[in-house]
Image 1: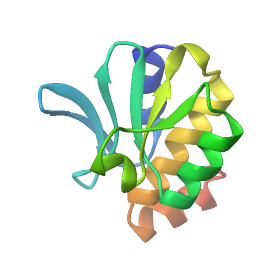
Image 2: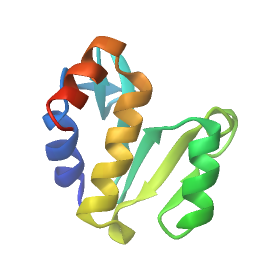
Image 3: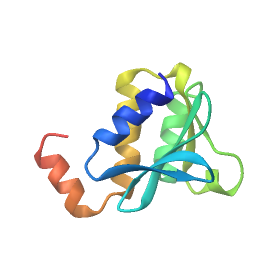
Image 4: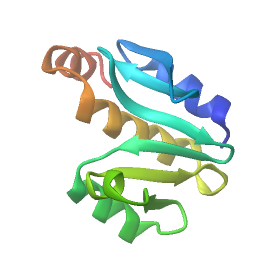
Length: 113
């Protein structure tokens, strides 16, 4: 997968917009970041610690905690070259759901998301 794939998938989610975070593209819902593109080849997504532990254990070549304190808060690096469309979609939807307000999540669920 590529940064363009991350952008395409992220921006299909309800209320998602692209902005910039420390000069790097990020994706937000209601001005809260759920994913970033910090460097070529990687994306970073907002997970809970439990989600992070499960994903990193299940696919260590694909997911790993961000270094330092942000990683301890659930922020997780995604190696795009190791990802496929289905996995990247699932990871981005999970990050979006962790960030989106209840009303958007409910509307997404009703629409079959």
